[in-house]
Length: 82
Image (cartoon, rainbow, N blue to C red; front, side, top):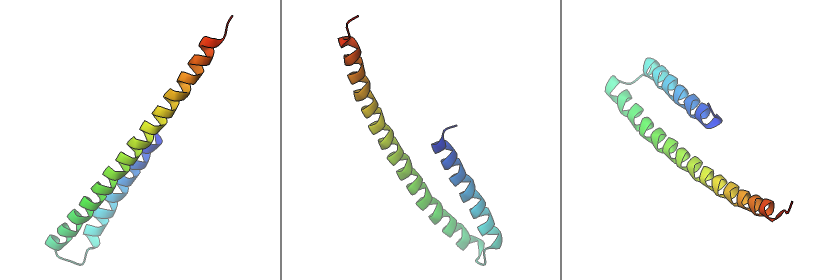
């Protein structure tokens, strides 16, 4: 399990625990509490999706850089005469 997966899992568990605790101690009626929870869940899903997109873009940049560097190394190796 990589670090990104661990972070996302931790966030998910934290949100679930926070939501459960919020429902248990909420001073509002159930319908109002559910509305608030749905609103927060939508915001969170948007931010998680944004984070995933950012991570994906970063990985693509890293992949591209590694491919370029590997090409340079391969050209150097091919240029070495034994």
